[in-house]
Image 1 (tube, one colour):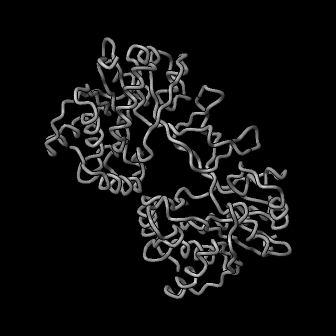
Image 2 (spheres, rainbow over the protein chains, first blue to last red):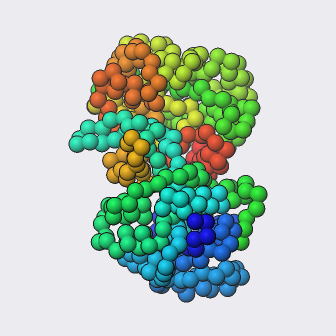
Image 3 (cartoon, rainbow over the protein chains, first blue to last red):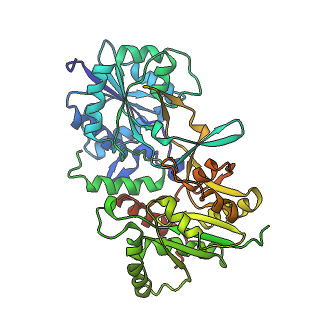
Amino acid sequence: MHSLKKYVVIVAGGSGSRMGSEVPKQFIELCKLPVLMHTISVFRKAIQDIDIVLVLPEEQIKTWKSLCLKHNFITHVEICAGGETRFHSVKNGLSLLEGDGLVGIHDGVRPLVSEETIKRCYSEAAIYGNAIPVTEVVESVRYFEADKNRMIDRSKLRLVQTPQVFRLASVKEAFSQEYKESFTDDASVFESHGGIVHLTEGNRDNIKITHPIDLVIGEFLLNSRTSVSI
Amino acid sequence: MHSLKKYVVIVAGGSGSRMGSEVPKQFIELCKLPVLMHTISVFRKAIQDIDIVLVLPEEQIKTWKSLCLKHNFITHVEICAGGETRFHSVKNGLSLLEGDGLVGIHDGVRPLVSEETIKRCYSEAAIYGNAIPVTEVVESVRYFEADKNRMIDRSKLRLVQTPQVFRLASVKEAFSQEYKESFTDDASVFESHGGIVHLTEGNRDNIKITHPIDLVIGEFLLNSRTSVSI
C-alpha cells in the first residue's frame, strides 16, 4: 500500500483582509519567507517524491511566480487557478490528477503542519482509505439546541486540521457532487457523499495564519524548531 | 440592579509544569509583571469598587506577598488558600463572601480579558442572573458517538471563557452540591444544580496562559493595546 503515488493539493485562496494587509495572507512573510513557501517545503521534506498542485486565485499567479524568482524557490509545483469557493478550488486542483494514489488536501496558510502529521496522515490513509488530522479541545464547550444551551462533553469533540488525505479516486468522486454551504472542509464533502471518516492525530501548533497575531505565533514556533526547511 | 455589590474570585491554582518552568504560571512575568497582577489590574480598572478575592495554593501565598512588595503592587485583595480541585478552590473563595451581589469567577491565568468583557458580564448577570462569556469556533469540528465520528455544526458551539458571573447567593448554593468530575467550569456547576446558563460575548484574545507560546501571544497582545494598567 505504501507504494501508492502521493499527491497534495495546496489551496491558497485568501486575501489579506483579516490581516489588515494588501498582501494576500499566503504571501505574507514568516521568518523572511512567504507563508506558502514554508507550507510547500514541509510537504517536500516529509515526502520527497510527492507531486504538488498549488491552487491560487488566477490574479495571484503572476505574483507567485515573481516571488519564487525573488526567493530562488525552485521546488516543482503544478499551478492551477482557483474557483468561486474553497470547494471549487479543491475540485479544480483534483481535476489535474489522474489514476490512483493518495491525495492530501491542505490549507496553504497552515505552514506549521509537522512532518510527522503529514507522514501519519498518508500512512493511515493508505490503510483506512482516508485520514483527517484532529486535536483535542482544551476549553469548556457549550452547545445550542433551540434557544437553550447546555454543556457538551469536550472529550467527544475534535478540532479538524489539514492535510486531509484520501484515496484519489474516491475523493474525486465525492467532489463530483453538488456544492453545499455546509461543506466546511474536505472531510465534510467526503462524508456527505457516503464516506466514513477516519481520524488521526494532528499537531497542536498546526495553526492557520489568518490574523496578525498568528504571524507572531508562527515565527515563534518556527524559530523553536531545530531547522527551517526552504 | 446595577447598584448590586460586585465581587470577583480569581482562582490561581496552577503549577508551572506545562510551562517547563519552576515558577507557577500565574507568577510568570508578562511584560515584566507577573501574569496574576495583570489579571487583578484589569478587574480593578473595569470596576473600581470591586472586591477581589484571590485564591492561591497555600504554599504560594508567601511568594505572592513578596512579589507584591517587589513590584509595589498595592491593590487591596483578600487572599484565601485553595482546595484540592478548582471546584474546591472556588468554593473556598466564595465562602469568604456574604449577603447578596454579583460575583465573577475568573481564571488567574487569563490576564487578557478585556474591560468590555468584564463590564458586559456583570451588567448582563444583573439582568439574567448570570452571564458566561463565550466565543465562536473557527475550526471544523467532529463529534464522537459510539465508535463513529461525524461533522457537527460549529455554529451551534461556543468556547467558554471567564469571568463567569452569577448572583452570589445562587452560585454559593450551587457550590454546596457534591463535587463531580464532569465540572469543567463554574457554569457546569451552576447548570448541574438546575441553573439556566446565559451566554454573552467574550473577547477572542482572552486566552489562558498555559504553554510557553501563550506568553509570546500575551506579550504581543498586551503591547498592541493602547495602555497596560498596573
